[in-house]
Length: 108
Image (tube, rainbow, N blue to C red; front, side, top):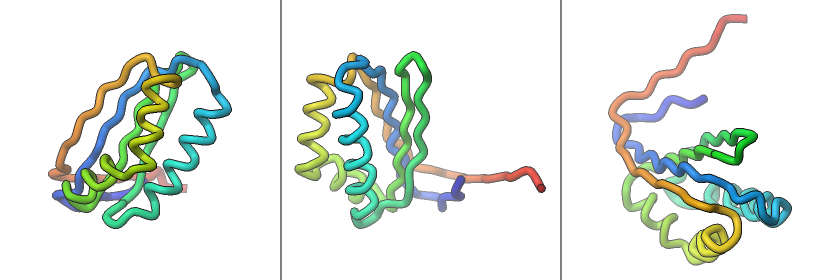
C-alpha cells in the first residue's frame, strides 16, 4: 500500500467480467499494467477481483493531464475497445482527486 499526496488523481474502474477469453484478458491486463507504468505521471495501481468476476482497479496519476493522457493512449484505447467487445459486460469509471491518504501496517 502506498500513501499518495493530496491532488493525486485516482481513476476508479469497477468492471464485471464476462468470463470470455480468460487468456486474452490476462495477457491484455498484464500488457496494460506494464504500459501504464511507463507513462509520465503514473503513481501506481491497486486491483482486486472476486470469484464472481467483479473487479475494482484504481490507478493513480500525478495530475488530471496524466490521467487523460493515459485514457487517450492509442494502445490503451485499442484494449478498451476489445474489453467492451469481449471481456466486460459492464463497467463504471470514476475520477477523483485525493484529499488525504493514510496507510497502516500491523507490526510484526
